[in-house]
Image (tube, rainbow, N blue to C red; front, top):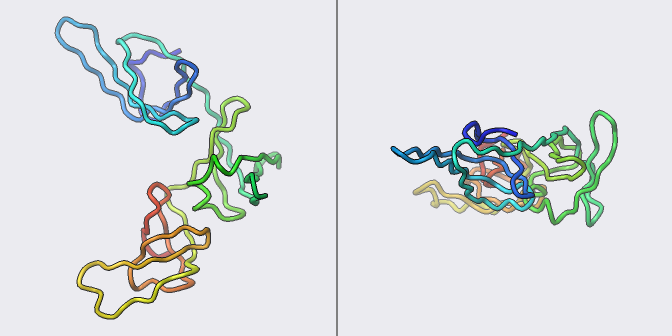
Amino acid sequence: MIIVNDLKPNMSISYEGNLYTVINVDHNKTAMRQMIVKVKVRNMRTGVINELSFTGGDKIEQAEIEKKNMQYLYDDGSHLIFMDNDTYDQIEIPKERLTWEMQFMKENDSVIVTTYGSEILGVSLPDKVTLQITECEQAVKGDTATSATKNAVVETGLSIRVPLFIQNGEMIVVSTSDGKYCGRA
């Protein structure tokens, strides 16, 4: 148990049967009242962002989240298969739980799988990944008055906007947080 006054961003907590990651903590102390601690949290199971309010000095349970470095092996149609790099154990995660992450993972990529006890919570991707352009529109001459972009599709199937100078087959860096072009690889 930890005191809510000591909460910091990226801490994991268990509250009312839910697992949360702390995003932001706000302490509000007025003259003769007890301190109010407002905590902005993300539910680790659903991804929903909530705000919880506590009285200063309340205790809350800290969740022990385990992170394992694993390798993405393949997609079997309904599940994604991952292998533990140390024990070579394989786990399956349903595809519908990883719809966003699938757009950035290629076979044999290393990812971090987060678990709570025996429950698999999800996959943490690196901040940026390198992907190859498979389809790309042709640039139209004279479209350069502003920072013009065109549509492209990368090897994982993600549709993205890229600058006009990017061609088919080029390697680009893509941000996994918002799915936007960051630069050439």
